[in-house]
Picture 1 (spheres, rainbow, N blue to C red):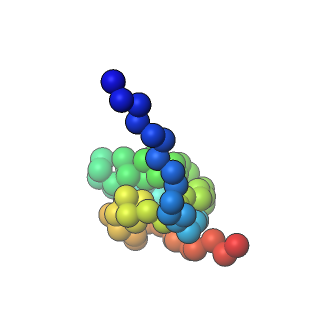
Picture 2 (picture 1 turned 90 degrees about the horizontal axis):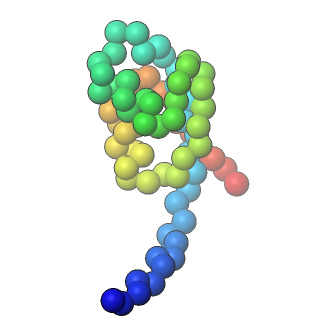
Length: 73
C-alpha cells in the first residue's frame, strides 16, 4: 500500500468572531443544531472560527441570531 503524504495547510483563512445575540426560544430544531454546531450556547457566548465556506454557510442560516466580526491581527 502506498503511504499518503500529509496535506499541508497551504491556505490560511482569516478568523471571524461569532457572537450569539438572540435567544433560541421558539427556533426550529435545525436552527438550534446550527448554533450548537458553531459552538455557541447561551446569549452573548462567543467563538472564533476560520472564515471557511462551511462556517459561512452555517452563519447564513442563522444570520438574524448572531453578530459576526472579522478578527484584525
